[in-house]
Image (cartoon, rainbow, N blue to C red; front, side):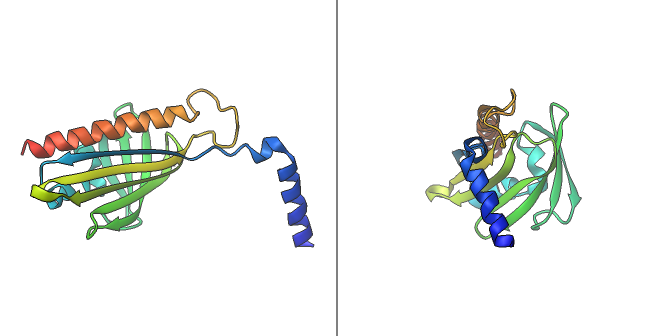
Length: 177
């Protein structure tokens, strides 16, 4: 009985073009920068999950609200300069690989299904490569006609600008030491 019902529902969804196409495509952004500082020094700043406000200009404040900093499951509350707030959850933290991955947990996100990874890699001559990438969907992922501000372009544009600004500021900060 359950199998018959499941097949009937699947058939109805597949037969309805509007329902089958209503899932937004996943978007991606990726930025990187070379910093003239050793990877361990860069990781000490960029790998501090709760310390994002120290180098990422759009964030005014960052506060640990659950767990322990830099431990999987930790949740930080970010206050943006525009006053909006969002909680992000650390879902992977590998200090030996200088990599961390996080996602939205609650609050006022700019996208849905957001997963971001920041990685620091050592380069020759004591330099570092910092990579920051994300995959996500627009806020109104369920419709082919999203309202203004909930389309594909809005989060893509915001994240591209923010990641670029953040990495440039991280570089400026670390190279001026």
